[in-house]
Length: 313
Ligand SMILES: Cc1cc2nc3c(=O)[nH]c(=O)nc-3n(C[C@H](O)[C@H](O)[C@H](O)COP(=O)(O)OP(=O)(O)OC[C@H]3O[C@@H](n4cnc5c(N)ncnc54)[C@H](O)[C@@H]3O)c2cc1C
Image (cartoon, rainbow, N blue to C red; front, side, top):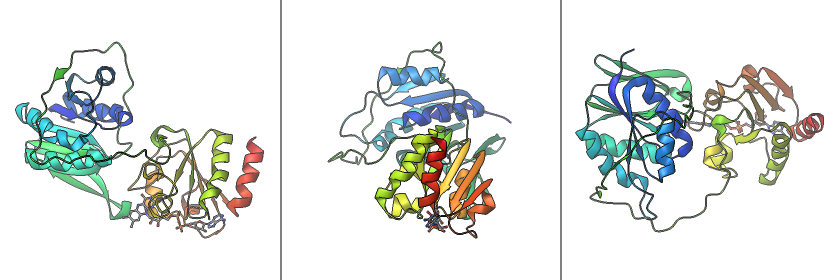
């Protein structure tokens, strides 16, 4: 596979930076990381393998990440071409991608699972039809912007011996900025399902929000992180959006994925296709999840889960 001369990377979420840098290393001769944050964040970018770091300065309280699009676009426009920009599939990453696409006249592909550099452009594969098929796009513009689907690359390991001096970038104010008028503490957990070895996930089989406690008890017993299906996060809003698994959520690759009261619709199951072992608990023996599960328990989760907790304890 050929490479591009320069891959620009940025992540608003520190946890995603090792993955975007790893992708950049595979696709480019040189990886240049934009960093918005402290000197420790700059050091982290070097340690994960960035060849150059462009510091956007410390975070400013009333400035949103997208406001840095003009600053980044100016630096990228002055750099070597053809170039590739890699961003994580976070909400801020997606917003930034669209702004960079406009400013750099660049083709943009979202949630790519596979990227390759070809003689006539950047090829990116991503799921279509709710995960039933893969679509392939070719970006032929001088700058290509690609949003990495979660889990597309194995995260780079930190190596503290890799250090460097960041280039300070002057802020270019956007013509119309977004004014941040209030910040509120986010509800829910800060777990990183992508890195969890064991995940217990709940679906609509959980009848009430307070019943999530039984799944949490199971998590405690087997040292698992808690995830959910989309309706639990987006419909009921019982859990954070970052905790739902599936094609439009996170795609963890745990050793064990234990699904409680999840029917197994394709949009959910695509998200766990990287799990080594899937265990399902569902009271309906015809639930589609049993077609994907390595082990299945047909039963009421309100009886099965306490029994599992007792057994594991
Ligand atoms: C474009 C698009 C993208 C989507 N992306 C995602 C995504 O990323 N992730 C996602 O999860 N969904 C996604 N969805 C939604 C998806 O299609 C399903 O609607 C959703 O996954 C169903 O969630 P569920 O399994 O929790 O609920 P349900 O389908 O309602 O299933 C609940 C299950 O619980 C079982 N059950 C009920 N009570 C009990 C009990 N006491 N004990 C044991 N079992 C019990 C039932 O038998 C049933 O099988 C998407 C949909 C669309 C259209």
